Length: 367
Image 1: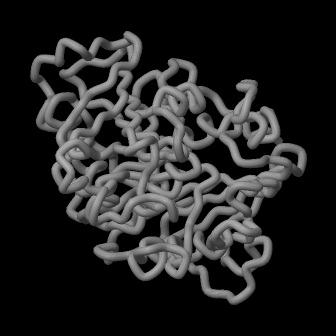
Image 2: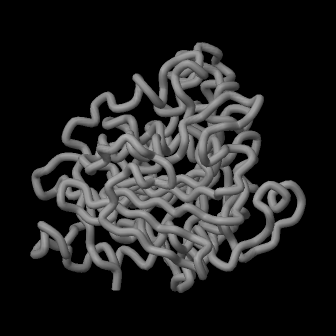
């Protein structure tokens, strides 16, 4: 069985279909942002090459220079400022420019994203909160920056605020985990995903982020999370043992933490090979190269999904050969595309706040 899927971001069509869980009779309405119906900014042209937009993020730092942040944006050719569109934010790996993560994921191409607005927020020096080398949140608050990016986009564009998604690679994957820890800003996302994300114990950090600092405001908030990780990752080791580098949480251990925040059954002491996590489904895919684990949480299927990939190093799975350090760390192309897998899963999720349960989600079956 292959992980190759048809084009992703088939939503909003997929997200408007009937739910097949506890909300079986409910259709998901769109939730238009305040920018709907306004004149499209002149620098933003549907189908044109991506552009960089500067914004002020005043809580980033007392240093006025660092308060001026930017994001890269691409509007699909079908975009109109009169019709709410899904939004995907993708966060780069450490020291990786936004143009690189855009080319790496191909989320700005019609092949992988024909309907959604693709945005690539830029970290200070192409680095985000969550790494041991990153400045503390008191100096550069990337969670606040993400909120500022969302506010800016929603004021200018016609965004379906029920269908905002976030993905990230490596250090950018770490940021999606921190968003998942945060019920306020993270609660604005319908779902989050990481590829090769790094999650550090508090004793390796200068401030508690992934441990004691994770979970504030997460009461009664469900934020679906998908994680893809290579068994041969030498940068972010699957078992957390990076040799002389700072130790990280083993991937199963941190998935257990996020699972518990989402109301999943994750109680068991043995984490080896994810056997310590109570999953509702385990599948062997891609000729035995991939094990897919999924969890049912609070009655919702696939709230947590994890792909454990044999032969994959530190990189974004893709059939495209990139060459250089990207393929050196990744250990070459794969026979499937992570962007398609992530997009297919994103298409299942939407906020259902319109139905009276704030910051909750529901699942619908893609066509």
